[in-house]
Length: 219
Image (cartoon, rainbow, N blue to C red; front, top):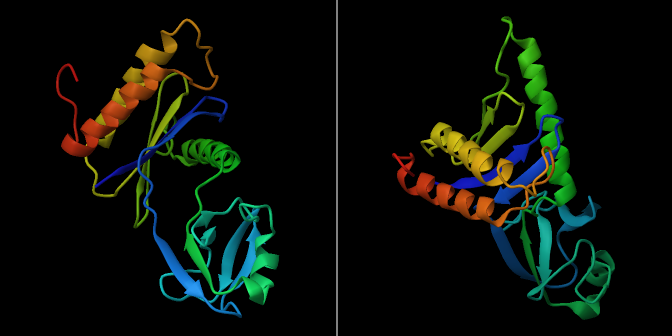
């Protein structure tokens, strides 16, 4: 069981904090001869597989490295365009590692804003007045848990569907936010949280939650 990530979203829908605690990396590496028997394309400034699933490589996987060297978006480490590099037969055989690319900062900001809107829609669709909005979304791979404070701050945790104690964890994160962000004289409300003590205590809370699933007195 694992807790994947934590998001804190302000009342306007802006992402003010994000932490990746555990990111499972389903990756596949294979040595190819010329011509490459996969179809690649550029998507969101990344090189991804568009056709030719095989050996653990799936459509949508991004190209992560060539010959053991990490790539930078659609370019090799020395600045060559990857698509053109792989068209050149003299560069073969070539070892390529594929996997799901991590979300960029801009993508995380956009997703936080989208969830803020979905939360509001969920509240408005309620047949009763005063609905709390979306508190949990479930997929086969993870659960998204959300706790909104009275002031409109949302604490979001993505975790393994089998992970227990998330409600207690969300309230513990709120407590950490109150103690180490709100009480910090250098912190401005609604702004990004940049506080070492907040980071340290959040990581500690996640470790406890993963091991025990709850918080005892004084934790």
